[in-house]
Structures are given as C-alpha cells and as structure tokens.
Image 1 (tube, rainbow over the protein chains, first blue to last red):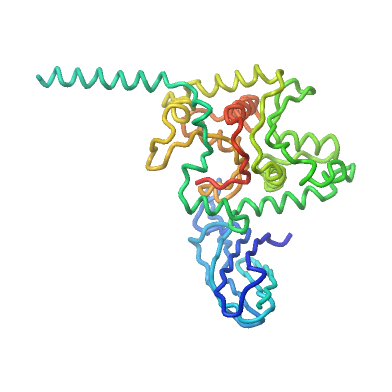
Image 2 (cartoon, helix red, strand yellow):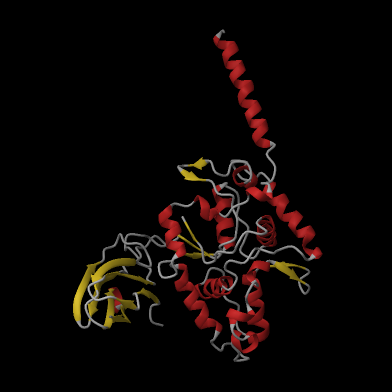
Length: 107
Length: 262
C-alpha cells in the first residue's frame, strides 16, 4: 500500500497571487533512538527528503531529521505563475518513496 | 492571632474547601462542553482543516477497507450497507448500543468486528490496529456535527449506572476517581495543562502525544494507569460500561471525530 497523503493546493489563483500549499503524509518517523520491548534499538525509519515542483521546476525542498513528528505536515508558499501541475515527492529510509500531484488553474 | 490558632483556622478552611470540592456533583447540562474548547488555537486549527488533521489519514484507510471485499464470504461492508456517507450517518453518535445477542452494550469497534466475523466470515480486527481505527474513524466521520444520542434504549439503563459507579469509584495507588478530575476540577490545571471535562465526542482521536489515532478504550486505559490502577483489558465490560456512561454524559454535544487532542 502506498502512503496516504493529503494535499491542499488552491484549485484556482490569480496570476502573481501568493498561494499556500499544505501537505500531510502518513509516516511513522521512527527516530532510531527508541528501544523495543526486548531492549533492542528500533531502527531509524524516517522521510529524509521532500521536494515540490511547479510545472517541472523545483520551488521547495526540505530535508527531514529524526526529531520531526510522525505524519509530517508541511506548509509553504509560492507565487502562482501559470496553469499546470504542482507535484510532490517524498523519499526516505528503507526505500520509502511517495508522489502526489495537484492541478492549479491560473487566470 | 497565635501561630497555632492561625494554623488551625487554615486547616479548617482547607477542610471546608475539600468538603465543597468533594460534594461537587455532575456537570450541569448547560455547562457541558467539548474538550475542543480547552485546546490551544494551533491544535484547534489542526482539527478544523481536513488537510491538516492527521486523523483524516486514518479515514482514508477506513474508506478503502469499507469498499474492500474480505473473508470467506468475500463481501465488503459496502456490499451490505452501501454508501457509508448515507447509510452510516448518525450511527456513531448512537454507540455504544445494546446488543440483544450479548445482552449488554457493545461499542462501535465491537460492532464492526461482529460484522466481520458473522457477515464477512473474516478474522476480527485487532484492537488499536490501523484497520480497526481506520474503519471506526471513517464511520464516526459520517456523524460529524450531529449531537450524541446515546441511552434511549431502556435496556441500557443498568449499564449506564454501572459505568457511572466506575466513574465515581476511587481506585489505584493514589485513590482517585475519574469524577474528581473531570466533574470536580475541569478547567483547572494539571501539570500546566487544562483538565478537560472528558467527553468522548471525537473518538477515535488523533492524539499528539501518541502521534497516532487511538480509541476511547486506549484513552481510558491511559487514564486508569495514570491513576496507578490496573487498566481494564481491551473489550472488557468495564471499559464498555465506562464508554457508554461517558457518551450518555456527553449527550447533545456534537460529534467531532476524528478529533485532534493534545
């Protein structure tokens, strides 16, 4: 099963308008510092990188660290320049990879 | 005034305050309010926005399960119940409900598992599993904004009373009852955090401390171990009676599931 994600991109914007983009993705963000019931270290399992592209051009990137809570939520802003697609990509430990995209219409 | 007399007066005063506190009764209906109102603005904002509320990730899981065929009968929930958005509206606001088969109340999680074992002929889902929490959250979402309406069935009356007794029962190493915090001292601070009235109108909730969705029974077990008492097992009649009493006590409050709680 792919990771569940929730994306909030305004479907419509005026050209030049500053829009807020919000993303939320299901991920345990296991720190690697916790111990299990048997005293053994639970291995690290986190998202390490997030990138957002707008019509193919990178507009936002974030490196994640161990202290970020489970199910990480991000909010950032961009300027609506053209109608097209905003795409999101998360990758992390154990080959974790997820992608989502949302359309935006600019008038 | 001599120091001894001063100390004595203080002691009497303290005893009087304690007596008043101890005699505090159930919260009058007009003062009952959702624990949402005691949360900080950031946590409220998280709950209010469906794309920022991590509980909605569980709802997506639940929606997928609702439509997935499973078990020896190869049936999905939707095969019998149709579209949950229509058929399941208001259902969660009426649970726990009386089960004639068991002769006692069952909660929504147990009801889902009854369907699984009897209709789908599949293995019951484990308590606090992603699947059971997801399905419960998906069902509870269909009652969002509707008032809690539990306890109309007269057969539930003795179980509501049993739940109330448990709620008022002092227990554990610190000899504390649920009522001492949630009836008598709600709105005060405990370790810097406000003590809520303890209403179950948003379960399953996404609790920030847990970093996951969790059921009302998990919350109850949490509270009971905080009282340094032995928590009741998942599915134990005591837990269900408490759930029933809490829902009855919160009658009329609007359902918020999946709520976010600190």
